[in-house]
Image 1 (cartoon, rainbow, N blue to C red):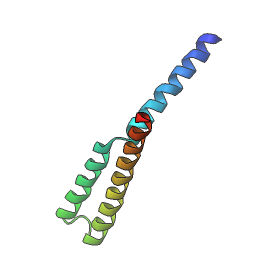
Image 2 (spheres, rainbow, N blue to C red):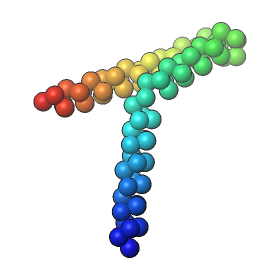
Image 3 (cartoon, rainbow, N blue to C red):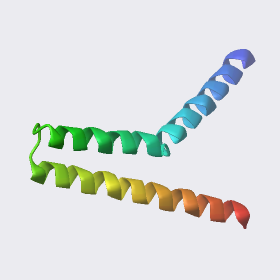
Image 4 (cartoon, rainbow, N blue to C red):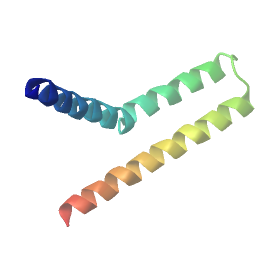
Length: 77
């Protein structure tokens, strides 16, 4: 019984670590930005759609950077 409980706790912690890395990974946003730009440059999306998506991605990137900075400042205190 305890082995199963320990395993479930370990698994939950690992899943949380993976989720946090995914959410705080700037490279995913940069990759998405490059993909959208490529779609625009190859005329697969309109300039309006490109601008909208670019703004959304850049906003998420800015928010992510601010959150990271806040965490670093919190750790330093």
